Image (cartoon, rainbow, N blue to C red; front, side):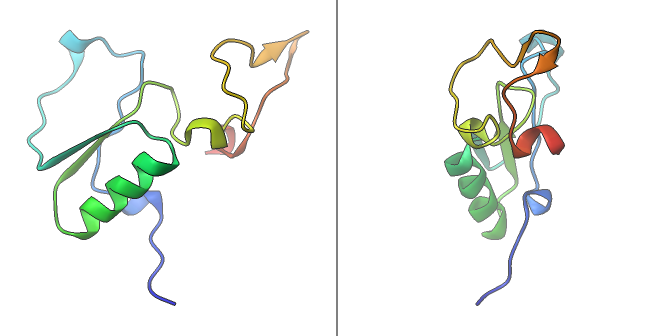
Length: 93
């Protein structure tokens, strides 16, 4: 089996949805990956492994897409009745 590379090895920039376009820094890069779901993360890792300066842009406050929300694709109800009701690995990162 070959080397394993974690997301931390991606030479990228993760921009959360809380930043407005006017506040974003200008970044010179070779590849822009839009979407930090499992496919986007894999694309960013492979791009960085190939030597490209890679920027990963994600609209949510964490990467992982549906994987981080326990497979639930609902943008609003993560907390209810005073506790977190939807969670996944992304909440631990």
